[in-house]
Structure formats: structure tokens, C-alpha cells
Image (tube, rainbow, N blue to C red; front, side):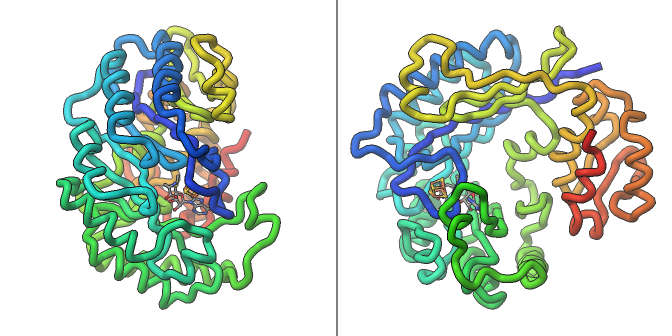
Length: 383
Ligand SMILES: C[S@@+](CC[C@H](N)C(=O)[O-])C[C@H]1O[C@@H](n2cnc3c(N)ncnc32)[C@H](O)[C@@H]1O
Ligand code: SF4
């Protein structure tokens, strides 16, 4: 039987000062005057169309992602949060994250974001090495990054994530470790540590930069960085996520546990369990900001709806749940997919026999070997 999981809210802001050459997110170079007021109205009209799918449910986290949400003023962020809170029930004290490019913030901004209801800031730092930042086409340097983080802390925001990337062009292991030392000095609650990937349809994919570390070197770099993070109190809990005690990102953990989420904004994706239809609905919004804005109150901004077939759910679930070091509970698999645990066998037994997964009572946990070959493990569950 499908049971309703927690519900998160994702809000996409699709503009950046400049498009980074490695990035395949739905982000577009910002016009000189951002249509903030129009976009706030479009987001709320978008939300109203989704409301019948989530009647009576409580939102447990909010995440402003991008693009660069910090291009929006605190007044616009407040108008979005107030508009959403007037239409949905927000759990008191819920986590509200805002992604921030360190090149886009000035004094006083964080204080105003905090007053608007933001209580977690995620900074796109990428590296503290100015050469690396330049090769990545970033608009900020390391001094700006450090200043931005301190401004947020001075404004009373203590729940801070730093995004770093590794295996960068011309980066050695010592340089990656040095980036972490600079991050530790700022005492963030959370570090996201991503291996640079060459995504299709990006400038880097068309013309890869020189000096990207080989796979084995990137793996060694990841292991050395993981050890340094652990030694500084940041425990790995997901492929790319490390946190101090109790500081895991509630919003992202909800995705990985196959929770539900509403996605509003250009190109945003949602996943909504519908027990009355005995189904799980994926819904996405059209990607281009101009078309999204032009949709007015019509349903033209809905890019598509898709029901996840029962046969596709084991893989869909594993794609998320196996990213977590703690794995998942078989009972939760049953509640969130609506399938009996038998739907996983004999594939689960094969993975256990290969030493990729292990069973700990009710939990299925990826082993160290399984984590190294995670894509292979996940693909076992492809229908
Ligand atoms: C939406 S961005 C964060 C906020 C803001 N847009 C910024 O870049 O400063 C999300 C994060 O994904 C990571 N990322 C983006 N493209 C990536 C790629 N090709 N490989 C690895 N990590 C990537 C970066 O660390 C980036 O900070
Ligand atoms: S600033 Fe962030 S979202 Fe924008 S292009 Fe760069 S990595 Fe992508």
C-alpha cells in the first residue's frame, strides 16, 4: 500500500550572471533587469495549479535552487515564501535553504534573507584557488568567497553549506586538500564535495579543458578528501554530502529517501504520491524562463506529467536510496513504492552475494565495494 511520505517544496530561479562552462542546470544568462515581480507571480500561479495534488499535506523543507537564487532581492524571496505559506501548511521551524553564488552578494543581504525566513545558505564556492576558479569560468575569487560566508555568519545564519568541486583541470590532490582546509577554517555545518563531470551539451563537453585528473587519480583524491573531512568532524552520509552531527540537509535527504516534492519554477521537477489513484506522479515545468513567464494563469507551464509504472519503481527507488550511506529500510521501500519487498528479489540477493550490499536486520546498506561501483549496483534494478 502506498503511504504518503513527507513533502518538500523546491523553487527554481533560472538566471545566473553568466553561464559556467561545465554547468547543465536550467540556468540562463540574466537580462539586465530581472523580471522579479513577474516571476514571483508566475511561481504562485504555478503553485496554485499543483495544490489539488497536495491538499491537506504539510511542507517539511523549502529549497531555493538555481541558477542563482541570490540574484533575487530579499523582498522577492520574502514575497515567494509568504505566498507559499499562505497556500500551503509549513511545518514550524522547517529548513529553508537558499543557494548563493558568492559573486552576487553584498552587505546586509543575508540579514534580510534571514528576516524573510531563510535559515540555511548554500554557497557555490567550487574552489578557493583563483587559478581553478578562473579555469571554471567563475565570476568570484577566493577572497570574495570567504567574505560572503563571513557576512552570512555575521547575519546570524549558522547553517551553512559550502559546495566544492574536485578533479578540476590542473588540480593535484594537495590542491584539493588545501581547498578543504580553507573550507574548514570557515566552520561550515555541511560540505558538498562534487567530482567535476563533463555533462553533455556544455562548453566543457564540447572542448574538454586540459589536465582533468584520470579516474583512478580522481578516486584517490576523493578518498584523501573523505578522510580529511572525517578528521574534521564531517561525516559522509551520501555520495557527495558531508555534515557535522545533526546537520544533514533535510531537503536532500527527503529526495534520497524517496520522499515527495513539489517543484515550482522554470524546469522544476516534482514527485507526488497519489494514494487515491494508487500511483506516483512525476510532473515537470517548461524550462525556458520566457515561455514560463508567458504562461500566465494557464496550465501551459506544465511541461509534462508521467505516472511511474510499478515495474519502474524498484530502480527509481534504488537510484535515490542507495546514494545514502545508511541505505534504506525494507518497510520504507514498501510504503514509498507500494510494492512488496519481494519485488526486489532475486536482484537484491545477487547484490548481497557480490558483496555490493549487506543486510542489517530490516536495513539494506551499500558496502564500501558497492559504493565504489554504485552505478553498476543501481543498474541491477533496471527493469
Ligand atoms: C545550482 S549550483 C549552486 C549555486 C550557484 N549556481 C553557484 O554555482 O554558485 C549547484 C552546484 O552543483 C555543482 N555542479 C554544477 N555543475 C557541476 C558539474 N558539471 N560537475 C560537478 N558539480 C557540478 C556545483 O558545485 C554547484 O555549486
Ligand atoms: S552559477 Fe551555478 S547554476 Fe549558474 S551556471 Fe554557474 S554552476 Fe550553473
